[in-house]
Image 1: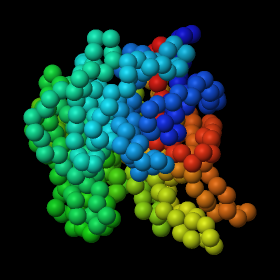
Image 2: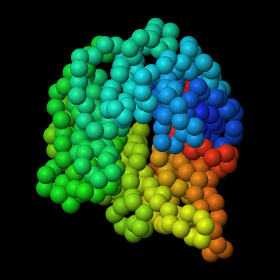
Image 3: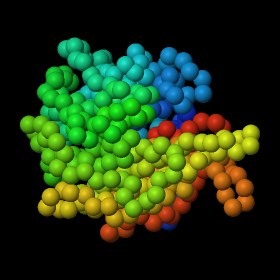
Length: 400
């Protein structure tokens, strides 16, 4: 690590972005800023130089305390201290954006929307600020687009579609699109395996056994890893500049070796380690049951599942589960050196303890990443108890 290198944690609480410097040795979190956005933070993505952060916000999401049709994309400067400053005005959007990414050339920002399912592409001006939307040909997206990513080759867009539906009627899928100069065109669709779909028909957000949520890519090999939300699975796909394989080459359970409680389990966020040797994915649960006049967590798994990647085949093997010391770990990040993983526990929740019932708060869990990929808890910190949720958390290394 250089003398000027800093590891910064960005973590949302409603519309406030809480900014911390993290000590990668001790896990200590030093607050350096609270930056208010125009609406609740949904997702964010930094440029490669780590000088700009592009943030998607909306007050129409399920976790917003006050619902209003206010949706924006905004560029922020990342200052050398890690603090944020406006870089151009917030640009209004037509609907709630759920995911944001940049293309490989960093000339466009791509935004995913779940209701209704859609992708928009916005030009990035020469100074890094957000420009006009790029007109697309009409495209029919599947149910509940949850993320948008551009493959490492830069010529293909991938859109996992969760297929959320109360009775499980909507199937999940992955949309595959060609991409050039900010414009998309349909290429293919990866859909549920009929042999695996039947047991999930009629189940809440069952998505025909294929609730595709998030993907991440291996840094050097032609492998894509998919988090399948409702099924709690990790899928491996081969990918290159020509497309994505239509079927996974390996499927692993994110709940192997643990006993889920009665709550509905959902896998959440996924990241491949910078060295390509490990992949991390979170399990989350939050259903409650009555306890007198209170609603108390009924029990489930809130942890990080750690997988080791076979360097020759890409097949992941589970090597660890570790509790996140909170409720509903929706997102997390890993620093550029692969030293720490910082997870964001989303919700406040009443939980049973030996002494009765206590309230846990949204907050951060800092883990050291060992040479074997396994995690060790270094620090845990609660966010302020103001009713808001920690919807997004990530780690950015400055000066790397």
